[in-house]
Image (tube, rainbow, N blue to C red; front, side, top):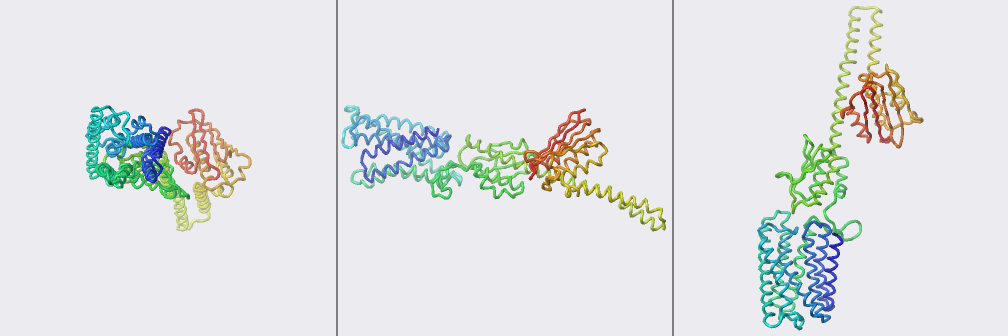
Length: 569
C-alpha cells in the first residue's frame, strides 16, 4: 500500500509540475505549484500512516485529477497537442467535484456521516461524470484555440448546455454539503468541533473562490487569480490545519530530537507511551502503575475512557466511564481485563485493535506484578502470625512455666533438688528460642554462608541427609536476599519431606551455573500429586527475585523440589 500511495502521489506531483511549467515559469506558476502540492502531500501522509482510512486515498484521487487536468492545459498551451490536451483538461471536472462535494462530505474518515447522505453522493457522482464527458465535446476554446474534439454544430452546443447543467448540479450539491457541515459543527463533540470548523471555513472559501472566478474573470484578473487559488488550496489547507493542530485521524506533525526537522508521525506507539510513562511508573506502587497504564491506553487509542480491572478486584479507570465498553481485551491469562470506551473520533479500526492487543502485554505484566505483590504481603502476614503463634504457644508458655517454678521454689523454700529441673527447663527454653530465631534468619547463614547453613540445618535431621555442593561454592557469598531465599526453600522442602513423605533418605544439591544459583532437594518418599499452590509463598518470593521454583513428584517414587535465583539478584 505504501508503494501504491507513493506512486499516486508522484503521478499527481509530476503532472502538476509538468503541466504548470509548460504554461510558463513566472511567479504565478510557481505559486500554483506550491499550493497544488498540498493535496498530494496530505493524501500520501494519510494513506501511508492510516491506509485503512479511505480519506487519504480520496485526497490522492483529488490530487491526481488536479495534476492530469493541469497537464492537459499545459499540453494545449505549451506544445499544441490540442487533442490530448483537451481530453486531459476535462479531468478538472473531477477535481472540482471532489473538492466541492466529496472532501467536505466524507470528512474526516472517508465515510458518509449517515445513510441519509447517499442521495447527495449519488447525484453529485453522476453530475461529475456527465460534466467530465460533456466538457471536451463542447466547443470551448483553450487559450484562444478551438477544441479539436468538440462535436460539430448544435451537438457541441447541446454538450455545452448539458455540461453546464451538470456543473450547476455539482455546485448545488456543494451548497447542500456546506449547510450539512454547519449542522455537523453544532452536533460535534468539543474535541471534534475545531476540525469541522476548519473544514467548514475551507469549503466556504473554496465556493466563494469559484464565484470570484465566474463573475469577476473579465477585467478583474487579481480577484479571479485569488479565487482560483482559494479553489485550489482552501480545502486542503483546512485539512492540513486540522491535521497539525487538532491531530486529525491521530496523525501528528512536529519537531523531534535535537535537530530541527519536521516529522510526520501517526499516533504514539506503545513503546513511546511507555517510555514517557517510565519515570512515573518506575517507583510507583502496583495500583499506580495500572492507573498510569490506563491513561496511556486512553491517550494512545484516543478513546473516551480506558479501564484496567483485576478479576474480582480493583478497577483503574482513565476518563469518565460512560456506557458499555466498545472493546475488551483479557490480559494476564484471565487475571484481569483491559476495556475501552468509544473513540473520541471515528470508528475502531484494525490498527486500533492491534494497538490495544499490544497494550495488553505491559498491562498483563503489571497485573501479574500487582498479584505477586499481594501474595507476598499475604505471605508476610501469614509468617508474622506463625511467629506470633509459635512464640505464644512455645517459648512464652515455657517462660511462664519457668517463672511459676521459680516462684514456687521461692515460696516453698525448696532446696537444691529444685534447681536441676529448673535449669534444664531454662536450657530447653533457650534452645527453642534459638530455633525460633533460626527460622527468622539463622546466624550461621549470615556468618558461614549458604552451604554451611544448609549443612547445619541437615545435620540435626532424623533422616540420613546428604548435602552436595559445587567446588568453590562454600567460600562464595551472595546478597542476603539470595542466600535467604534458597535457604528457606531448602528448609521448607526438608520440613515437607519429614512431615509428609516418609522418606528413608534425602539429598540436597547446591550448584552454580550460567549466573544462577540452584538448590535441589530430592527424597525417596511416597510422593504426591503436585498442585499450583505447592510451596506457593516460596515460589512468589523466588519470582520476586527473578528466579523460579519447580516441584516434580510421582506417587511411590519420591519428590524433587528445584529452585533457582540469579546469583546477583
